[in-house]
Image (cartoon, rainbow, N blue to C red; front, side, top):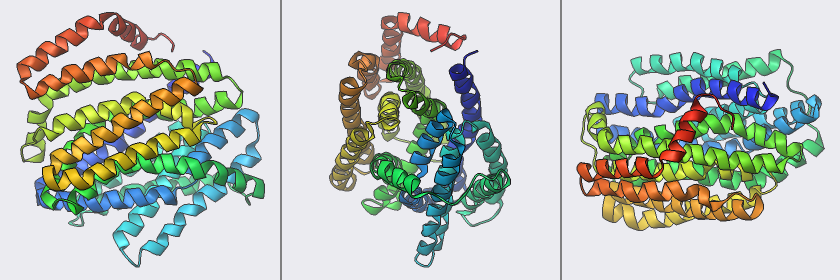
Amino acid sequence: MSYERNLIIRHSIASVVALAVFGSTRFLYSVMISRRYGIEVLGSANSLISQAFLLAIPLSFFAVALGKYSSEFLGRGDEERIKSITSVAFLFPLLGLFIIPFNAYIGLISVLRALQLTVRNFFYGIHRGEVYAYVVLLAFAGFLAGFMDSLVYLPYLIFLGVISAAAGTYLIKNRLVRRPGARDIRLLISYSSFAFLGTLSGVFLIQGPYFLSETLGSAGIAGRVSASLSAAFLLTYLPQVLQSAIMPLYSYKYGREEMGYVKNLSERLTGVLILATAIIVFLLLLFGREVLSIFFGFPLGDEFYIALIAVEVYIAYNPSIVALSSTKYVKRASMVALLGALASLISWFFLIPSSGEYGTMIGLLAGYALILLGTAYVSMKTLGVSPSVYKPLLLAAILQMSVFISKTALAVAFLVFLMVLRGELMDLIRLFRGREF
């Protein structure tokens, strides 16, 4: 088995475990808080956590660069430079401790979240994703134990705290830190200055709806948004599994100047994710809202449908924007992501006060759609990725809109989708049976 395939499989297995656990925490948290304290407490709690998670992005300023360059240096056999950049990346999140006097919970959660993001990128960068999976499993036990107390933020404080402590122990035990060199600091700053904008924009579109729906609307609107998005964002589990496994490989191949491999892998992953996600979204549109309403203890509305389609669009452009961010085109990827985030932000100021949770989801969909268009154009011009890979997404989105007519119309649309793309679906089935990318 080739090193590349072995790496993808090993990291994917680790990612399946780690991301299944981590990705489920927001959904489980929302269900538990909603049923125990009600929709308004759910909205307020998720609003604070989202603010902390957004602040964690500048605090994890070097995290993405750490993953990229540790993988590149690993490909070159330069272990000392890996230690150098690791020291800088793990110290920077501690600046968030200065937030604690202003808001203790936001300060603590933002620092611990920033450390967790740095930990994740580091372990995948050095091709040790399985270690991260073990750490997350250990922390998840603490997350569940946190619900035994009445403090609504305790589950995340324990969860992220255990990950940070375990990672620190690993670094010290394996002597993976040393005094950073000036050259490496400049390298991290140069890359992170642009990668940061893209990362911040992406995270803003995930976390922003939670707290802006409360700020521009009400705690009740934020609660309904929290319920729909915490469920819809579970779909991002699939691309995150592949992203965690593939991004180090993108950088590894880029370090070896194998750009053809990057282009082909991006196209293949995009096709796989679009088909797999479309099928899941059709099924959730048919049955998901009614089931989730039972979990949360209050009925979800049509905003859930819009959220699903928005997340579907996000998943579609993910492989290409990750490929751009893993290569010399990081600046262009960041600008595209920033443009989409600004579009959503501006629209929310008008849509949330007038349309509540529906406005939140429409603004989110608009931002993701704009990023999709920009990513398709830039990846075509730079990497040679064909825009035709997005045709199944366009077909799926058009057919899925039939949910606003009736469930019967949606069921017919689903059958049409399966018939039109039956050839591609057979390829997808063969892929999951063991064929290589």
